[in-house]
Image 1 (cartoon, one colour):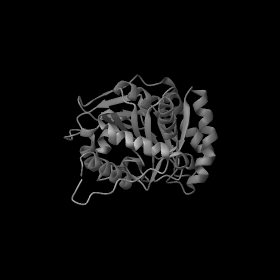
Image 2 (cartoon, one colour):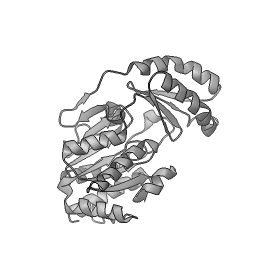
Image 3 (cartoon, one colour):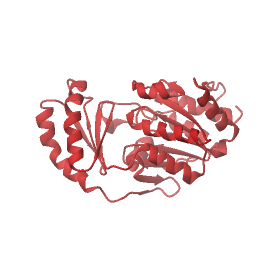
Amino acid sequence: MGSNPTPLPRPETEAGAEGLAAVLATPAEAVVALDFDGTLADIVADPEQARAHPAAVPALVALAPHLASVVVITGRPAAVAVEYGGFAGVAGLERLVVLGHYGAERWDASTGTVHAPPPHPGVSAARAELPAVLERFAPDQDVWTEDKGQAFAVHTRRAGDPEGAFAALRAPLRDLATRHELVLEPGRMVLELRPPGMDKGVALTAYLQEAGARTVVYAGDDLGDLSAFDAVASLRGSGGAGLLVSSGTTVPELTARADLNLAGPGAVADFLGALADTLAGG
């Protein structure tokens, strides 16, 4: 993306090298799928302050025209990810899709609209019980609840003892989720309660089928991305190709399975830009 382009990193596994080679050989048949927080945006203490890395959108603009599609798959509401990512109305991203709430919501840049299902009744019921659970199991801890509409998340990153608060709340919140027919999704200092039946792997598989793509690059940073890693592994097993990228994570399950481990959103943006340069012959 410039006079001195960043070299394209080499995957650390044979399967990853094959996945990257497939993207380079037939980019118009490939999808690049990306998590938002921790992958396109740095992790911050206040999730409402998260924004896409400054180099991310320019890299996507350079890359998108070469591909079948670019899709962002996030646990956030789709509209929030679009706002924090700065994706709306960007020339070159007219075919961008954002799948929010693990695929339950969808925003298409071509229309600028969000399609979402009715809220699961268990979410509001569990949310009503949450203050009592927090008071009992994490008193005097500075935990913060993020209301996502279709789900909610309890963040412990700002607590005096973030790991201790996370551990103390994990079982009670799992019980709360079970009582209301929800699932608990743990992440890095965050515990999310959401409706069952949807995860990033389901969303990614459905999107690839819709796009008719048999080659995918997927980048993520947290436990919620493992299901997408599973979806890519399944695609490989059926004759497709994939490249798995981890972004600045300390989650060993991701780093062990990734074909390419990058340092964080800045490095992901550099990788996307280098891929764009390579496809453009730069």
